Length: 113
Length: 116
Image (cartoon, rainbow over all chains, first blue to last red; front, side, top):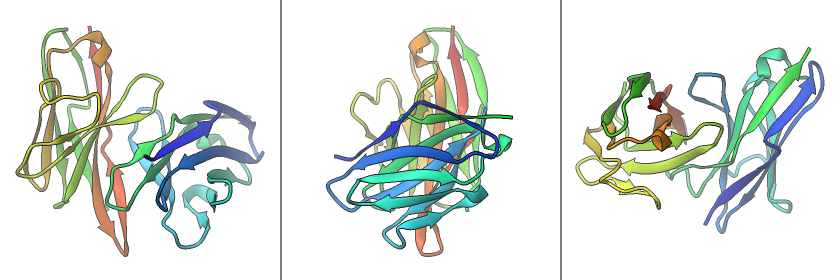
């Protein structure tokens, strides 16, 4: 079975500070991993994905994530937070690219001025 | 990419009634899914909508409560039957679409359901 765990349901950072959202996965097969963002009253938007190519994945809006097999982690980072980054972030895993997504619990990011 | 239109975007319904949510995609897709997002929680997969056959339901979800139709490769409906306040959630349609060499999941805006 596959699962993801997001550490921290709420993360608060100051504008300009580093953003670090944690995601650990469990998978019996090589996983495909994703980060999605959900702005208030909107659907999900793909930030980035890992599909067994480069372990450091760059996404939209300055976000990136590093796949670390030894740590079974896929943490999301951004060097400098913007107010517009305030949203809910979901980590997700799937067995293959055509499979169903299993989502983590979500992390709400708040950005303080 | 894929543009997904969900209707209605929101609704307030009386308990005991049923609501059918529509999902229309702007292109043919093989895989369509329905998710539920309960207040303050993550997304949980309800079922995979299969074209021309019965949907495949996840553990904890049954066809009698969440009947799904998939008449063609661009359209699906999810019905929430005999609603109770516990069904108040956001329901999202999702599709898988091939983008370049990869496959990507796209989501509709969701249907925000409140049961009173």
